[in-house]
Length: 565
Ligand SMILES: Cc1cc2nc3c(=O)[nH]c(=O)nc-3n(C[C@H](O)[C@H](O)[C@H](O)COP(=O)(O)OP(=O)(O)OC[C@H]3O[C@@H](n4cnc5c(N)ncnc54)[C@H](O)[C@@H]3O)c2cc1C
Image (cartoon, rainbow, N blue to C red):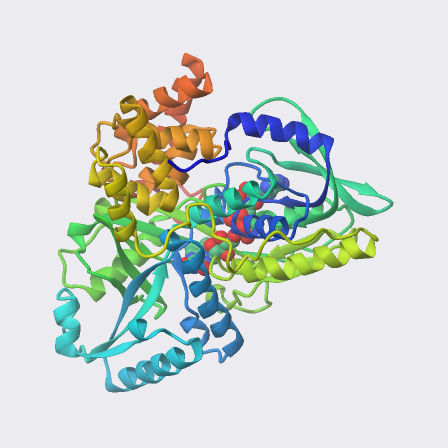
């Protein structure tokens, strides 16, 4: 059984004490993919790293993406060859570092005219060459008949053919967690529920921050030679903590996704659709669900858990109803949803979908390094650019640099210590842990990669840990113990939403499992009866909130509409 370091509530308490005691080379504010990537990169470089996250890791934008590791095809029309190559290389790197978090998926783009067909063919041909796509994953053009054979539900009228190419599918929140755990294993001191409330200055330069403990009382002062603001949509708020009159730089746009039962839209691969305003949106199959995404609209509401409007949802449903010959899909078919905010840099006069997705680094008057924009796909490259600035700052201050501990392009993420596919991993786990049901092993391998070995081993060592939740989804006591003991899960929502993903992929959003999981967590985290009930109530309210579609104008009077289930 794999030996894993503890990374739990106890570690978190210990880390708060360390944050106060030690001085760091870099303090990272924000535990989304940007912050996690910087923490890992800096830890591999041998630096003393601290990272603090206001709520749970990945609770901001990084659990709310489309979950695609783009090869860069989308940058081709803008002629940005550099970006195409960077995205394509990064996707290959991620597959090496964490095969469970970068799984190839076919993308099918139906075309409805000869001109469209020729344009797509030229684009895919150029892309394969520029991106150095492997032979097995080269694009293919399909005739009308071939397209319909693959996706029989496609609207037939005027269908000319289709383009077929590959993207990789990831699990965004798990990517953040496995990146952070890799950083922690290298010595990074990390805490969730730890908001930066004020910055600390020495002679006008940022020299750390006061960090509150959101689950208890008190604040600690964390001293650091450099501070990186990776606060995603909150980047401007953290920049404002410098005082002075720094202008807002972010332009937030909202993107939503809807989850439907797969049998209501039984596609076999990701199908790209054209929405009413000609934007490309898609339907992606995932287990026994399919998700539709995404929208791109200006946003000015609350940053935590942005609400979904009826208009947002109907936009995606209309695109699917237009693209497929299915019994019309409605809001009542929706079994789950999520909404996220893109932290883009404002560009005067541009519409949401026209704003660049490139990241930008801003150095504040106090030396605060802020980063916004960017993608999950290229997070490692973004982290490298930020690390270069951090190192330059450390050198300026005359601090000597330690020897590096490893290379971020080759050191696996947590759970990435296997080669091959999920299926081959399941097979080897099945041989080793014969008493564990293959269904459970498949679930574990898909979510946790090689760390599934610890969970399966725990079930064999103590059969009580093999107990499953009543919903039949294969969630065991051992898995939740792993989330609590090795993934710093502090609340029921942390377990059900961002670690086990029941919130998304269970038809009932994990509600049937919630009470049992809360009891298990209570026994390990010493929750009182009252706390356990509060956790359960908070989780139920959260599920209800996400599935409540509001009228477009937040304060307008009108009825809300609920998704199915
Ligand atoms: C709808 C949508 C679809 C997308 N699809 C894709 C895709 O398919 N592929 C892709 O590559 N990219 C995609 N992206 C882009 C990608 O998701 C984002 O670029 C990325 O997740 C941003 O990560 P981040 O770490 O910068 O921000 P976040 O994930 O938001 O992280 C910032 C963190 O900082 C924390 N924080 C804020 N203030 C403080 C404070 N004071 N103290 C401590 N912590 C603080 C927040 O709680 C938050 O967790 C998509 C984005 C959206 C919105």
